[in-house]
Length: 552
Ligand code: ADP
Image (cartoon, rainbow, N blue to C red; front, side, top):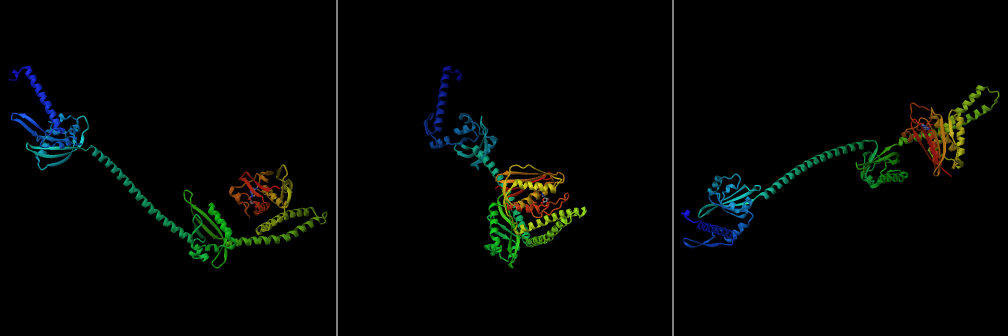
């Protein structure tokens, strides 16, 4: 019958249908956006009023505007309604969504599975996480909230789709943060355990070393103490309490100052305060009162203990009883003093007799006897020097080395010594070029004694090279007189000690006579002249001994 229609009639029908379609689309859009909630339809039964029973205007607007996708399926799973958000999530336009089977949009969803959900009435509210297939965009994790709808026309499904990608992302970040946190916590726990172990170990070490220290401190024969950096005493060993008879409290109430001999208190305090303020080692001799009231000499020594960064932690001090040694030295000094005095008298007589002999009937004395007398005079001279030196040492010890001083010429002093040395050491060569003369205040005999001692040593300790150089020069407000040799020389350690009383270098390969008194006496003489004495030397190459004396 349609074939009988003319082309115009068909065109008119088509236009009419197109118009109806547009009208229907507009109506749907109006319903969707809530502009219409009832409308009249003209049909075979006349005019009929249709109202939108299931959704009033507010809900329709809400569903259209909400952030979740919302769809309605019929019982075959075909999408009857979709809001714009679902179409957006699926990456399609609305008209490409409505009328499609829902299983096309969810990964792993079959029509059968969907049917099960629809048929299963018990699942009136069902939530499941699925993946939404998106056209031309990455798939989305979504939460499906499925509700069975029992409509007049039969069962249908309403599904809300919530985009879980942000939540998943946050969960992922949270998970990795938690993992990092857990890792950090594990590291912290490990460190804490290690720290606890170290502290336990250290505490053990500390108590062991404290124990060791106490055993050591209480069993050595010396008095031992410790001070805080500012000088307060905080420990004395048992020996201190035994020796002084003081209690712990008495000691720390400054009573320890009463233990020091009254003559030594000021000096001790000064020395100690100097060390506390400079950090220098404290070393001195003083007398401590024993509990029976007897004072005994002690050698004190305190050293500062520092940590790795050099910070002073505390002082450790010891006081060693040297009373017996000091008394022995005093007895020796006394013996030297008496012996040298005792020797002096017969020596003087011997000298006088020898002089008498050498002048007695000179012509009649056989030549051989004359040579014996000369030799005896030589030996007597050496003995005389030795006894004189011993006497000088005694005087220095007693603080009684006195001599007068007057202005003298340095050139004259040195020339006299050169002349004497020429007679005494004919095999050596004395080299001296007199220059400007300097005047000083001094004792000629004593200064000659010093220079002759230096020349004597220069010759004595130079077995191979016989040259000795003397020089005089001005150095600021002093005149410097030097004696240089090219002999065995001295090591730095030896140089430090050679001015001490009775010190001699212990050299098995080089043995000479001497008692180690010459430099000690010389130093004392120069000190009495307010001068200085020193040595520059290289072992195996030679030495230069010098004196510095203040110019007039
Ligand atoms: P001594 O009578 O033993 O020479 P000194 O007091 O004069 O006593 O010298 C002390 C020590 O110093 C000597 O024993 C020697 O070992 C050393 N000494 C002194 N002068 C020299 C020198 N010119 N060269 C090397 N060593 C020297």
